[in-house]
Amino acid sequence: MARHSTPLATVESAGDEDGITLIIHAGAGDRGRHHTPERSAQVQSDLRRALDAGYAVLEAGGSAEDAVIAAIHVMEDAPEFNAGRGAALTSDGIAQMDACLMDGDGEVGAVAGVSTVKHPIDAARAVKDRTKHVLFADPTDAEIAAWGVETQPNEYFITEERRRSLAEAQAGGDAWAKRADEAGDGAETAGTSRDAAGSGVIGGSLGDEKHGTIGAVARDAAGRIAAGTSTGGITNQMHGRVGDSPLPGCGTFADRRTVAVSCTGIGEAFIKAVAAHQVADRVRFAGESVHDAAVATLAEVAAHHGDGGMIVLPANGRGVVAYNSEMMNFGYRSAAGERVNG
Image 1 (tube, rainbow, N blue to C red):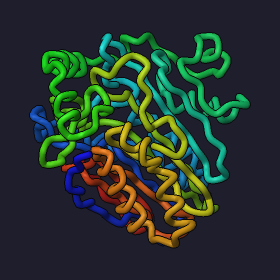
Image 2: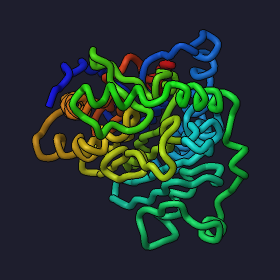
Image 3: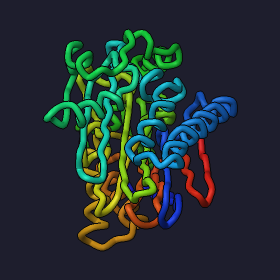
Image 4: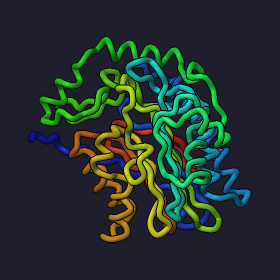
């Protein structure tokens, strides 16, 4: 099987050695042909609002889990990002969303294929806290009502920009599949591709889904860690497709003995690499630094013709933002200060 050269990962340290820290992301990929300075400014504004919301929880002595949810709520409401309102549209034109929430004690909840939950991360929390299960796929209206989470009609989540993205992706036909076959891997997902140079395209031929999957990892004053991820999937995906975000250990993972991780990128590759859990295993069993574990795991993702990024925060030590795509939207804040990149 032909393999592309492995893209070099960009890695940046984030947060303090100890104490409260919040790291967030809002997608990774290329800049896309619809990129504008105005859109970049809006992304940075939304990221700062998310940091404000999550960090306020930590400063008030709240839990890492509550901080993660507060930050994700802001990003799920921001149509710039591919989660909640502004989610990518499936091939049949609906918003179909996934989310996962996991704390450092290993308690986890997730949902896949929800289409009416205003904040999918709330549904993930409800699964964790109110059921004996871990993952619900396409939960019923009765189940969602019993969980007490807010709902909206599917039209609420659909924006004109996402309609345009879907139309452009469908007009591109199956060119992505031909490229994937030529690369030696016919199992690439609809709407994702790798070009001959090994660069990633998220969202089909557009390269326009960089404002994508959102996530957060946090460490609170008690040293507890948590991770959450929320996504609208990929433009023009087949109905029922599930990516890495709601799968514990693939797109989301937290273990108080090691790290909290949230991933973004070409989901199928992150699933094949069991990426989030692999980072934790490398730290726990191989004794790798958080930096080295993230780089090595992204190399595994690249070996499956995928690109993207991850945010990683240990229970003790500084976190990292790592990505092997052209760019990544992220932000972090701790007592040492903050940085926003969008």
